[in-house]
Length: 217
Length: 107
Image (cartoon, rainbow over all chains, first blue to last red; front, side):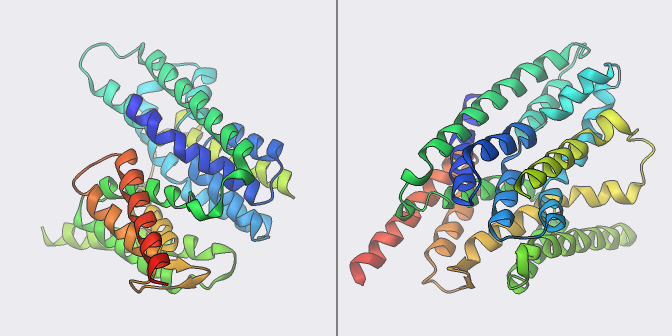
C-alpha cells in the first residue's frame, strides 16, 4: 500500500497544478477531482477545456481514457453481487486502477471472501483521501511551481509505469505500437481527437491479431 | 461550460465504473466486446505516452534533440527492469533534467 501511495502523491500534485494552469478555478479543480476521482480523466478534461474543445469532445476524451473501468467493473461484479445496491454504488464510486488491483489480489486468496468488501473500502478510502490531499496541494502550489521544472513530465512517466506492465502479449504490443503511431500521425487533429482515433485503431489491431492467432491454432 | 463539463465527466466516469457492478450482468455480455476491452489499457496508455513524448512545443519532433522523447525512452527501458511508478518518475525526471542541463551548457 505504501509504495502505491508514494506513486500517487506526485501524480495528484501534478493533476492539481494542471487544473489551475488550464484555467479552472481552485473550486472547479477540486470538484472535478472529488467527483471524477481519476487522474487520467481529470488531466484529459483539463487539457481539453484549456483547448476550448466543445462539450462533446471533452466528454468523449475523458470517456475513452476511462473505458478500462468497464473492464474492471465486469471483473469485480461477480464478487460483489451479494451486496446491496448502495454498497455496490460505493465500490464503483471509489474504483481506481490501484484499488482494483489490490482487491483482485484479495479475492484470489483462498477462504471466505464475503467480507472482503471491507478490505476494499479501507484501501480505496485511503487512496481517495491521499489523492484529494495531493490534488489540493497541487492546486494551492499551482502557479508557484516554475515551468522550468517540467513537472508535467511526471504525468507522462506515470503513464509509462502503467503502460509497460499492461503489455503482456504480442497482440497487446501491436495494439500499443499502432496506437502510438496513429496518435503521432493524427496529432494535428483539433481538440486532441488524436487520442480517441489512436485508441480505437490500437484496440482494433489488437483484436484482429488475436482473431488471426485463434484461427491458426 | 466548465461546470457543465465537470458534471458530465463525473457522471460518465461513475457510469463506466458502475456498468457491471451496479447496472448489468457481466455474463450476459457479448464476447467480442469483452475481448476488445482487454486492449483498452495498452492502446489508450500508448497513445497518451506517444503524444506526451513526441510533441515538443506543439510540433511532432522525433529526433534526439527532443529531450522529452529521449528521457521517456530511457524511462521505458528502465521500467522493463524496475517496476513501479516511483522508479519511472525518478529515472525519467533525472534523465530529463540532465538532458536539459546539457543542452543549456552546450547552447
